[in-house]
Every structure is written in C-alpha cells, then in structure tokens.
Image 1 (cartoon, rainbow over the protein chains, first blue to last red):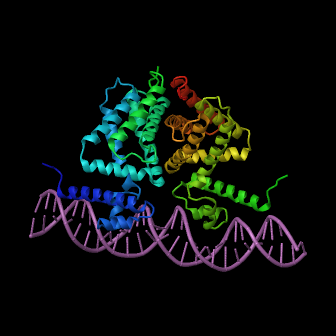
Image 2: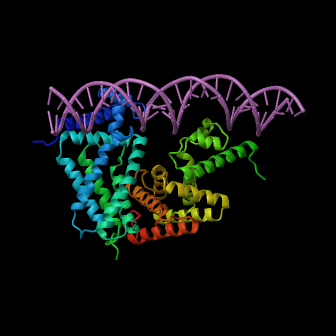
Image 3: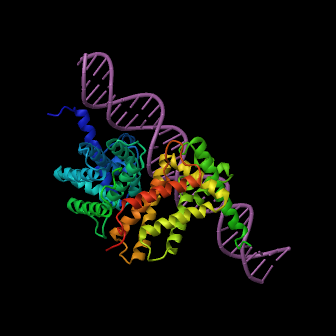
Length: 208
Length: 208
DNA sequence: TAATTTATGGCAGTCGCTGACATGTGACAA
DNA sequence: TTGTCACATGTCAGCGACTGCCATAAATTA
C-alpha cells in the first residue's frame, strides 16, 4: 500500500486538477484570455494557492513536459556507458515515449492536450523553449560526465544542443492537422532522429 | 547628406539612449532588480514612452541581436543559389560579423555590452533563444525558397535549426572569463561552425 | 486528546504593460 | 512666416501576474 499520507495525496490531486482546469480553459478561450483567478476558481482554490503549486501561469501548462525531462535524465543514466552520447540520448527519448505509451490513459490524454495547447500558443511555445535551455545545462553536465570531459566541453554541448533541436523539431506540428495521438508523435520523432543520424558522420559525437 | 529629418534623428537617439541606459543598469544592478521606470528616468522619458519603443522590458536588451537577423537575411539573399544551404548560412553569418567589425566603435561596444548582459542573465538568454526560434520561421522560408522545396519541408527546417543551434553555441561564453571582444567572438563562431561542418556528411543539407 | 507541522485563504502592494485622452513639437504647404 | 496637420510624448487610470505577511484550518505525530 501507499506509504504517502492523505496530505500528499490531496496535494497531487489539486495539482492535477489545476493542470486539467488550466488546459481546458486555455484550449477553450485561449491562454492570455484566461486569468489565474479563473483557473483557481474552477478548482475552488484561492489564487494565492495556485502560485504555491506553480511559480508562473505558464508553468501549469509546461509542468508535464518538464516532468518528461526528469524521466529522460533517468533513462539516460540507465544507458550503457560505451554507447555514443547521441545514440544514448536518442534511446533515452524513445524509452520515454514508450513509458508514456504504456502508462495511464488519463496521463496520455493530459500529455497530448498539453502538447496541443503549447503548440498553438506562441507564448507557451516560447516558454517551452526557455525550459529547454535550462534542461540543456543538466543534459550537458550528464553527457560530459559520461564522456569524462570538462563540464563546459564544446563537443558535449554541441551533441546535446543538436539533440534538443532535433527533439524540438520532432514535437512541432506537421501540416495543418497537427499531431493528435502518441503514435503519430512517436513516428515524427523517429523521422527527425533518423534524419539527423543519416546526416552525421559515424563517430561524430565522440572525441577522437 | 541625410535625407532623414530631425524627428527621425531624435527617435533614433532616444532609442539608443534607452538601450544604453538599460544595459548599464542591467549590468550594474541586475536585470530583474531594475524597473522600467528607472530606465525611463535615466533617459528623462516617461515610462509610457519606453513601451512605445520596446514592447517588453527584455526587448530593450534583445533588440540589437534582433537587428542582426535582418542583416543575416539580407546577406543570405545575396549568396549564390548554387551554394548549399548550410554553407550559405555560414557565409552570411561571417559577413554579418565582418560588417560589425568594420562598423562604428560605439556600435561594437554596445553590441558587446548587450551580448555580455544577455549571456549572464538567464531570463535574457532564454529570451534570446526564443527569438532565435521565432526567426527560424523566416530563415526556413528563405531556405525552402532557395531549394525549391515546400515551406514546411523537414530538411530545410533541420538545416536552419542546426544552423541557429550552432550559432547559439558560438555566442555562449567559453570559460569563466567570457568573450569581451569581437575577434574572440568571431573565432569562437568559426570554431563551432567548423566543428559542425566536420561532423556532417558531405551533401547532407541537399535533397538527393 | 494535545501539540506541532504544514497547507490554505485573505490582503495589501509592486511591477510589467495597455488604452484613452490631452499636449506639445517637428513637417509641410500656402 | 504662418497656419495646419501628423505624430511623438506625458498623464492617468486600470488590469493582471506575482509576492510577502499574517491568521486560520487541516493533517500528522506524540
């Protein structure tokens, strides 16, 4: 049974409720048109409490992708050390998607809803790019550690930046319809990853 | 002689004055610690006027790099059509730096000051990356046009994204000292460009 | 049940940013 | 030169995001 108490369960519940309410409101009436007060009211929580769960208004939409980074880092740490860095990153990403595909239905729909809202709200898309910059630092640190390089190693930075770029392109919408299910998203990610791998010389991501 | 009138000259003057005052204040007391009111007061202008020149507070620091994009696009348009896209982008970037090196001393110092402030202010750095992603759309459109591809062509998008990534890494600080002069910056950009070119298969950026 | 921790609500206030209206200053023609 | 017009600026009122502070209510632990 769960070791966590009622308190913690309640917190996670309101957290998800805030995310769901926010995503629905964003989708229905637009991001900038909805106020934090509205989101808080929908969950019957004070606006002050909202900011105890999310530092900014955009965080409520970006928290899910941000969680993705944590699992990506975890998957990356699990990859064998002899694997070249870009390959390891690619496999970690694939594992992350698989994890999501095998997970809860509610989680999947929430993730897709978040992705959709982010994708056609410039401000949120900008915010997600912002977060990518932050997460790049952590990924660079991990890759440099794996490769035994200095923390500010240029090649490690290049590898990670290229990877996040490819991932970003993969997440962006293709065509007017957009991507509305996980398999299509996975295929799109696969396409960009293979495009990148085909474009690069063998052994490019390792110091010689 | 100048064809522009007194009115336009005054505007450009206050615009530069706002940028200079803002950069100095940001450098002295930090970005978030300085208010728009302070910047406006330093130039003896109403806060409302500030927002007539710059849409947001971060714009005042990012407007210079943003101007760079325009010249980059202009240089790109001047590159011969038979040149492969990534090569053309690289040469356009080099031309841009050369242009800056041959320009006014005041412009150079201002550019470097802006670069320095952006580089060690996370919020501004994130903002500059966000702008780069925005400008990607225009670059993709131009590259796709050059190559005779559809506007949402994946390869064109990949080429441009890779280019902006390389450029971004080039602009980032190396080591604790940072980059304080244009030649060092140019060298750093050259290093990342050659790293990228060495990593990629010949002909990767053209549809086969 | 009592004591302690911790989540929440309410409130006042700062700051980024905007719309509307009034005023002043350059541009241009008579 | 003068009068008219366009436009840059100042003022003010206001919204919404976000924060610090203190009181209160709920859950945890003894």
